[in-house]
Length: 219
Ligand SMILES: C[S@@+](CC[C@H](N)C(=O)[O-])C[C@H]1O[C@@H](n2cnc3c(N)ncnc32)[C@H](O)[C@@H]1O
Image (cartoon, rainbow, N blue to C red; front, side):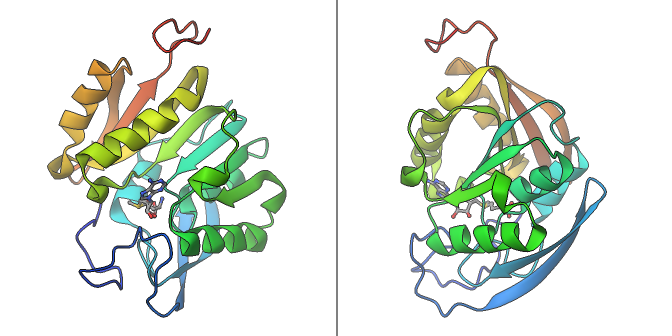
């Protein structure tokens, strides 16, 4: 991912993914044009990519088209919400759930949805607030590599099984942050994953769930 190592307004003892950041909360506008839609958003201190669109996220947008048929979409690790909000704007039928452990991110994402007029189809929440039985046609993510491999693997194994049969996950990961080994690991876990794009040292990965999925216990 783009700049997992760059400044987020947090110091060494506090990361942008803290559940309840204690750094003073300063908001900062971000404008992004995504899939032909102009998005005026608000980011904030203590939340990933304060004041800007992350480079990895920008590459994710540049290398993909918005989902064409997906109705239920999960934005995993939403930050201030840009990925799920871009989908909500581009796909009028999409119903988006955006999750983040960072409560400040959840707050910003919900506020941004209201400002963009998509609140009726957009819910931002912490992971434990999402009903366990909810499933998704697509999961989109610029995943939190910085939480470390075991936590990242646990995160993906928690949410990928929520893909409906025939569904897919689309992720952007930095090559130097382990995109290729993540791709291999996903395959070994029974989640076939292909590289569908990339630029500037980032890979866009697509993980598919089979339409008839005996491996993960759903058909
Ligand atoms: C690389 S950032 C991407 C943020 C946003 N999607 C973007 O593109 O700007 C990853 C996000 O994952 C969140 N995160 C970290 N651990 C998480 C977890 N266990 N569950 C959900 N989100 C998590 C972080 O707080 C962070 O906002």
